[in-house]
Length: 272
Image (tube, rainbow, N blue to C red; front, side, top):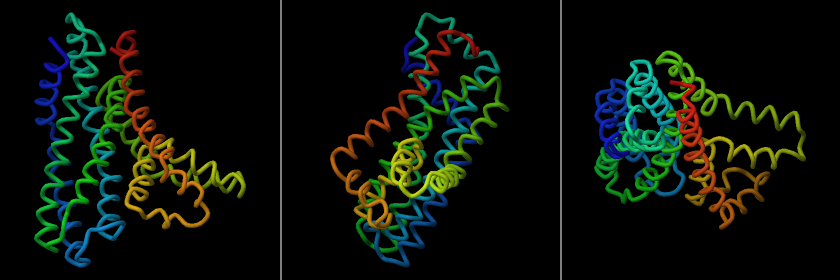
C-alpha cells in the first residue's frame, strides 16, 4: 500500500461526504451569483473592484470553514470507527498515511474550486463579455488557502477524540481566524500605542493564513494604496521581492508544520 492508494481511497470517502456536497453546491451558487450580478453591473473584472472584493470575501469566509469541517470530520470519523488504527497496522509509515490523506482531500477540495470558478467564469463572460483571466488568479489563491487550512484540518482530526470534538475544534479555529482575529489585533494596537501599530500589523499578517491571503491578494492586484498611508512602509516592503519571498515561506510553513505535527502524534500513537 502506498500514499497514492490512500489518497484514492480518501477521495472516494470525501466525495461521499454530505459536507462536501453541500459546500460544493453553496460555493458554486454564491460565486456564480456574485460574479454574474457584480460583473453585469460594473462590466469589468480588473483590479480590486467590487467584483473582486466580493469574490475574495466569499473565498476567505467559506473556504476555511469547508476545509476545516470536511478534513477534520473525515479523519476523526476514521479514528472513531477504528479504520485509522487499522490502517497504521499495515507496513507503511505514518508519513505516507498523512501525505496520502492530504493529497486525496486536497484533490477533492480543489475539484470544488474548479467547479465553482468554472461556473463563475461562464456567467461572468455571459454578463459582461470581458476577459475573465483574473479568475485564474483567484483560483490560485483559493487553492493556497485550501492547502493551508487542510493541514490544520488533518491536525485537528488527529488530536480530536471523535467527530463531535473535531467539529467543535474546527468551528473554533474558523471563528478565531476568520471572525475574531481582526478584533484581537485591533485591541492589541490600541493597548500597545501608536509606535507599535506597524510592527503589530506586520506580524499579524503572517500569523493568520486568512489575513495572509487577503493582504497579499490586494497587493498582487496592485491596490495596496487602499490600506492607507499609515502602513505605506509595509506596503512597499510587501510588494518587493522580500515580501514575496516571505509570503511564499509563510504559506509553506502554514502547510507543512501541521502535517509534521500530525505525523509526530501518529508516530507516538497518543491519539489513536
